[in-house]
Image (cartoon, rainbow, N blue to C red; front, side, top):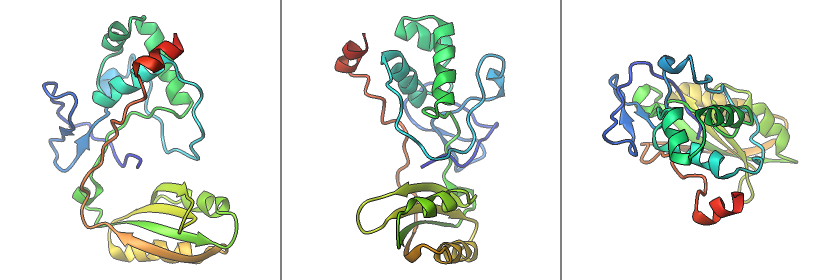
Length: 212
């Protein structure tokens, strides 16, 4: 899933860099965050993503940057460079390229249910033809947080985020009104149980040897 917000009032706990940090405002969990204090040396985070293509080939340095920022979104380029044995300028250039290539996005991760978004659901969509057109249309909507084309029972899965159930109904009715949509099925979220973005980037010994 993609991020829903950003908070400048968050307090970061450096004693637990691998865990989720807790926002002072409440009900906001952070895993990757850069504040305005980094503006002089760090590029800004990307905005909303469009279709996510297959990534270019990553080497050990790229993977090391990704994993370092997954563990601690406020990690400095200097410390990442020291850990990977390259210059800070190299890390800065690689970070910018990873962002420009839509591979990496550093942002605050929130719990929508804890921020007042009372209606969050996964909607399965069956289409009468190729699903790309439906996926493209729904992906333009602000309420669509996550859109994937799938194989199996549904052709498209859409994660919808709304303030209340009336708004959720309106969105699902808009989906049903699309020309190529046959049926939809909604799965309303009752509680967000797990949401992590620290799966790593395959920085195994084999991957490092492969990149060297």
